[in-house]
Length: 365
Image (cartoon, rainbow, N blue to C red; front, side, top):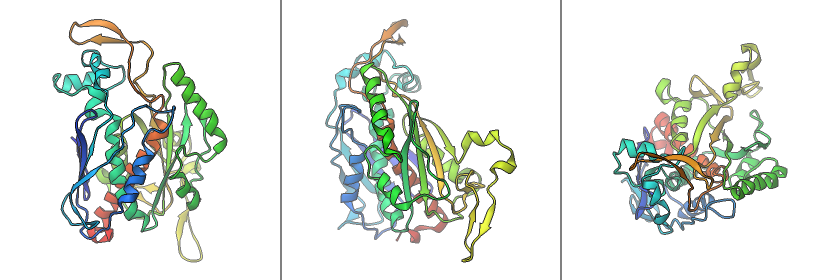
C-alpha cells in the first residue's frame, strides 16, 4: 500500500530511477495559503551536501499539477511531481539477479515475481522520502501557526552520543534552531567526532547507524484516538514507512520495563493558573494513546546503510548459486544525519492528520 491518512490522505507514486516521483494530498481545506519558498527550503535539508553523504544530488524542482490556485489550496487533491534527473541505472544491473544483504531486493523480487524495478531500490529507495518533505513542509506551515513545533536531533551515531532532551522543559528557541541545522545536535562538541566516525566508516567501505530523538512541543492535551488511531500507533506506522527505520520508542520506551511503577509513574500537579502538568515525563507526553499536554518524546533507531562496498554473502537468483557481492555506486555511509529532517516531516504530517481528525477541517484555517 502506498497511501496513508485518516483525514489528510497521502498517496506516493514513482520509483527511484523512474522519470518522476510524486505525491497526491487529499483532504486539505480550501483557502489555505501555501508558502512554496518554505517547501523549497525544507527540501534542501535532506539533500546530500558533503562527503558524509551519497554523491547523488537531485535538484527536486517539483511541479504542482492540481489543488493550488494563486498560492492557495482549492480543495481539490494537491498533486506534486518531482523529476529524477541524476540517475546512474547501470550501477544496478548486477543487482537485478544478486540481492543486496539487508535491503529490499530479495523480498521485492519474491513479492512481485521479478517484475519490480531494481534500479536504485525502486519504490523502496530513500529517494521516496523527498515526498515526506513536501507534505511535512505543508503540515509545518499549518502547525507552526498554532504554536506547535517538531524538532529532532542526532542522539547517537554508532557509539557516540549527544545529550538527550529535557523531557519536562524543552527550550522553544533551541527547538527552532535544531530544525535549521544541517547536523542537529544539542551538544555541539560531539559533531566533529561523529563526522569523523562517518568518514572512517566510508573509508572502510562500511556504514554506521544511529538514533534520532524527537520532541513535539505545545501539542494540546486530548489529541489522539483510542486503540487503533492512538498517537503511538499512527506515528509509529508512519515512522516505520521511512526506509532504514528499525525501532521506535515513546518516552522511556523499553527502559521503562526495568523499573517499579512507583519509579516511573508520571504524577500530576496543578499550578496557580489552573494548568495541569506532570511531575515527570516517562510516558513521553502520551497516556492511553492520547496527548497529555507534555512534550512528546520519540526515539527512532536507524540501521546502518545496507549498501556498502565491502564484500558480502549473497545469492544469484538466476543460477541459484552462492556468490560474493561487492556493491558499486553512490551510497550513504550514514543515513542518520539526513533522515533526521525526514523524521521531522513525517511527524509534522502525522500530528496534523491526528489534529484534523479530532477537530475536523475548520481547524486548518
